Every structure is written in C-alpha cells, then in structure tokens.
Amino acid sequence: MALPQRRAVLDNAVRPTTRRGPSTGQWQCLIIAPNDKHRRELVDAATEAGWVTVDCRNPQEALDCQQRLLFQLALVDLASRNHVLHHALRDAAATLSQQSGALLVVCGEGSADEEIWARQLGAWLYLPGVVEGGELASLFGEARELAARLSAPQGAAWGGAPVWQR
Image (cartoon, rainbow, N blue to C red; front, top):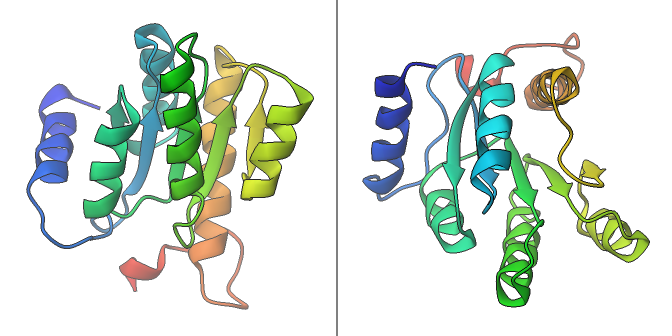
C-alpha cells in the first residue's frame, strides 16, 4: 500500500467520532506490536494479502483506534520483556476479543498457559512467536477468506462480499 493511502487511514483513525467500517471492498486490520521489526513484517504481510492496516506501537493507541474504526482482524504481539507493557497488551487483546465479528490473532512467547489464555479469550489463532516470510502472508490470506465468509449472509457462498458492500 502506498504511504499516502496508509497515512489517510491513520489520519481517519484519529478524526471520526463514530465507529465506521471500511470502504467498499476494503478489509481493515489492527496490528499491535511494540517491536518495530515485528510490526513492519506484520504490516507488510497483511498489506500483501489485501488488508488495509492500522499499526500501533502501544495498546492505548490501538484501543483509541478501535473506538473509532471497525476492524475485521486484530493481531496482538505480546512479545515484550517489559512486564507492565506485556500486561497492557494482554488487556488490549481481551478488549479486542469482545468486538463482534472481528478475528483475533495473538502472537505470544509460546507457553502453554498463554495459549490457553488466548483460546479462552476466543482468539481465532495463537502463534508461539511471530512467524516470518510466506507463512505470514498465508495467515493473513486465510484470515481474509474467513472474514469474508463470516460477513456473508447466512447461506451465502463461501468467500462472499462483505455485508457493507450490499
């Protein structure tokens, strides 16, 4: 995605007073990753799979965006050595898990307790660490297909257009 288009999405994330969905044919993904390298990899893979991304470095910034925009996918990278930030990321994941119709992906440290916690939240996918390369693009592609199926009216063919396009 070109920088001006991405900047427009971020600018719009700051201005609206009501929550709104994506424009026709667009799928929005919220990415929370404190690590710059992880965040860039995630944004690149999501963009490659056709998502319009809003990426945030910290949980509060992400929750502010979540109040203004509707996302079909949220990804939270819990990888942080900072204990306070780690808990804030977990709290953000719990809040995002309550957004109706949104898929949640949690990237964690790989502990069984963390995976159980993510599953209890209703996470669509738990990843023990950030996956790299083609696997990430594949993950975002699968998420987009599932989001399309979930947004289609009951009985519609798999891969239907989002509800807001009708």
